[in-house]
Image (cartoon, rainbow, N blue to C red; front, side):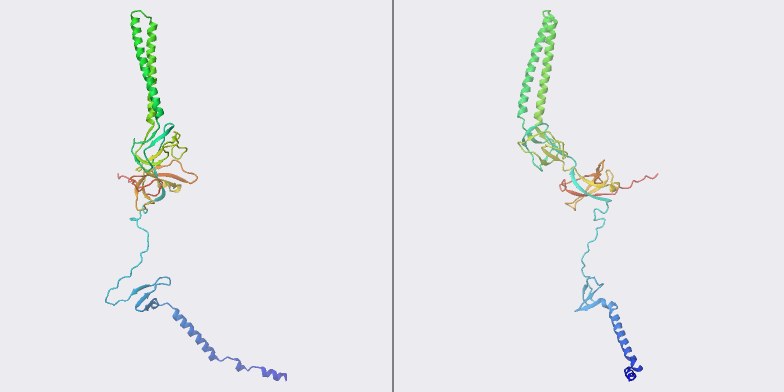
Length: 351
């Protein structure tokens, strides 16, 4: 009974095998799909051109923007399509820094900034200039109150007049004493006393004259003149202020200067050069100075000063470049770029 049931559940050997025709159809179908995918995926030159409503669109890559060329007849010449200019580096003819061996930025300064100070304590009575005014050498710019020194001058001149009277009296006494001594009426001692009195009067007159000259000097110092031809950079006091001669000059310490003046035609560029670039710089080396405010302007210059001592903290050395022909566009304390030009090689004379 059980054996019959097992035999009824057994699958025949012919029914176990799948028909070969069905498997072959599946393989052919898969191969056809694969071939079609490869055909459409393979790149061709014709894929780079697509015709859209009378215009040809050319593509050169997946990230390049298409260039549209308008269609035209075969007989008419085609005009090239305009292209957008691409910014490129300037050549050496148009680039002012292309022929330099080193470019450093610095600040324009006056070669000499003069701060005018009084020679003694006094009251400012009058100032005849303001900031930005042009002055000439010897021009009166400030007057101090001179009433005290005018009074001293009169006192000294009166003392000098008294000494001159004393000299005249001593000369007359000496003449009388000489006559009496010649007639043996007076002794030699009286003659000597008269001579010494004359010498004393002359010495007192010389002292009085010195006092007059000193007072006159103080009066002259009350009139302050410009020592150079230049421009007033700064007015530091006003009329009515008390000033003293305490001044260390510039920014090196306390200063009670009256005015600051400088020559606008004597300008330099002060720069700090790294120690690794010092081998490219030498005295009197030619340079090109370009102010940052006017990038289209440039000026000739030379290396005028190389500091004898470097800055340990910054690792730099201060260099000053003299601007040969400055004009009104160069303003002190503005920044400028300095291009150091190559040093021409020395030419060895032929024997």
